[in-house]
Image (cartoon, rainbow, N blue to C red; front, side):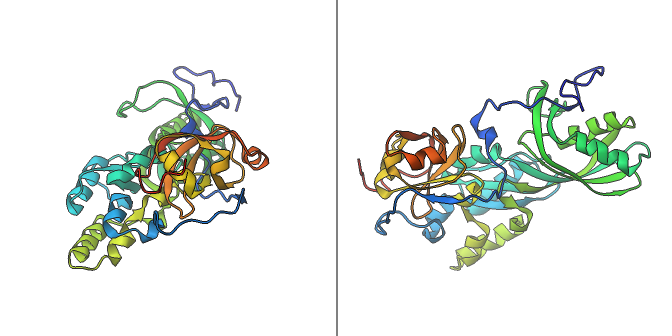
Length: 350
C-alpha cells in the first residue's frame, strides 16, 4: 500500500509513513530481544549493601513486587487492581495497561513502590490474540493480503468509547498473522506498539475488505516481558496471601515477582557499587561508573540502570551508543529519568 494516506472519505486507514517517535519510551525494543552483554571493567559488589531481587525479605519483596495477573472477563482493570490491594492489605498499586472489562489476559500489577516503574510497562509493546468476525464471505487469501497491509506503521483513530483524545495518529504493528479462519471468523495474532486499538484494527480491516468486520473476542497474551505462561489468577493471589498469614511465604513469592522482572525487555546498564548512590540522588550516569552494558544501545533508548546484584536502580535515557561507552573513559552515558531504588541502600561513593 502507498505510503501516502489512502484516498477515502473520512480519516486515512491502513499503512502510514514511518515516523520517529516523539516520546523516548515508545522507542523501546521488542520483548525478549536477545542482547550481548559487554564488560566495560571488572567489578565486585559488597554483600553488606543491597540485595539480589529474588532474595529480598518478604516485606521488601512485596513493597518492590509485581503480580503478573491474568485478568478475568467482567471487571474493569481498576476493579481488579482494587481487589489485589484489598486482598493483600496494600496502600498502593498500579497496572501496566488498561484492558476493557470483557477482555482477558496479561495485566501486570505493580505493588507499592514498584509503581515507580509502571510507566515503562504502560508504553511497552503488547501482544494479543483476537477473533475478528467478517460481515460477508471473503476468501482467505484476500484476508491474508489485508493482514499484511496492516503490518508496520498504520493510521489509527481511537474508538469513540476510549478515554484518549480522538485524533488521527500512527501506531506500529510489529507482527500480524492470520492463525486460523473458519467461515466468517478469523483468528489473529498481533504484536504492536502501546496504544494500538485492536477493536479499531478489526473494523479498519473490514473497511479495506469491503465487507465490514468487528472484533468478537480479545485476549492479551503478552505485556513487554510478561507472557501468558507467567500469569496467575486472582484466586492464586488470595490463596498465596492466606498461606503467607499462616507462615508459609513460598507461594506468595511465586505469584509476586521482583519489579525487575517487569523490566527485562529493556536494555541494561550495570553500574559499580560506588556509582549507585549518586544515581539514586538523581545524578546522570557517567562512563567511569559503568561496569557492564548491553550491546546495541543507541542514544535516546530507555535503559534500566542496574546494580551488580541485579537490582533496579533507575530508568534513564541513553546519551551514548554501547560502542561509544566501550571506547571512552569520560562523559555522560545515561540521563537519569526515574529513580527506582531508595536512598541509602548503598553508601555514598562520590
